[in-house]
Structure formats: structure tokens, C-alpha cells
Length: 154
Image 1: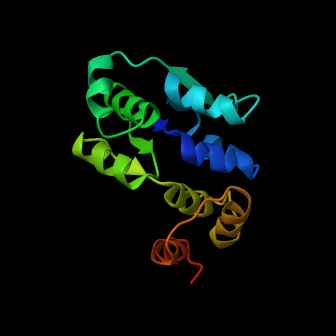
Image 2: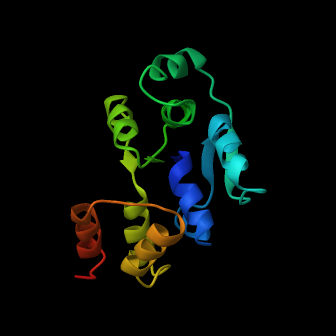
């Protein structure tokens, strides 16, 4: 499975010490240079399973930067270029643009539900609480309830 990631979900999981969930679920995660640069601003080192890849079509990145930041734009184009199975992205606008570009998306809550289903995580609810407390990662109650239902926690 080929998965490309934007910055926010990786950052949040690193902050709570759960970045290994990504490796357990997907093996290697591809990130573009802009995402690597963003991650290194707040983390001294990066997990080994993050594989930085260059984006070939810079003109497509520039086109998307009218709507998105560089990291999101590069992640979307890298996902297209590598025919990724999924792009890990949480920002609503970024998700909408990715879908418009024909890229399948998954958010952090989707990852957590998959981790629980794969028996890599005991409780989605507990990790969401920790993400909110430690990583300042906030989601609507409605979205959280959908995830908790999918995880069998309601």
C-alpha cells in the first residue's frame, strides 16, 4: 500500500509517542520535501519509516498553492505522481482539493480506527483525548462520535 502524508497527522502522532502506528499500518510513508522541512522545524529527528520523495511536477504544485500551503500542495501532487492508495491529510480545504485532484484521502481519526481494527491500538477515544491535550488536535464532537462508532466504542 502506498501512503503519502501531509504534516499535521504525523506531527500529532509524534507528539503523543504513537507515530509507530503509521508504520504498523502502512509500512513506509512517503512525504514530500516541504512536509519534511515542516516536520524538522518542530522535531529534531524523524521516524525512519518516513521516506522523503521529490515532486516532479512543480508547475502542478504552484497551481495548487493558490489554494493551499506548499506542504499540502506537494503532498497532493506526490500522491498523484506515485498513484498512492491514500493521502493522509486532515485540513478540510486540503482534503477537498485532494479529492478534486482524484486523490483518496484519510484523516488521523481514520488511521486510529484502522489501528484499533488491526489490534495496534486499545482505545481510539483515549488516544483522541491525549491528542487534544498534548498535541492541541481538535475535532468536532460529531466527527469524533462517527469514529468512536466505527471503532466499536459507542
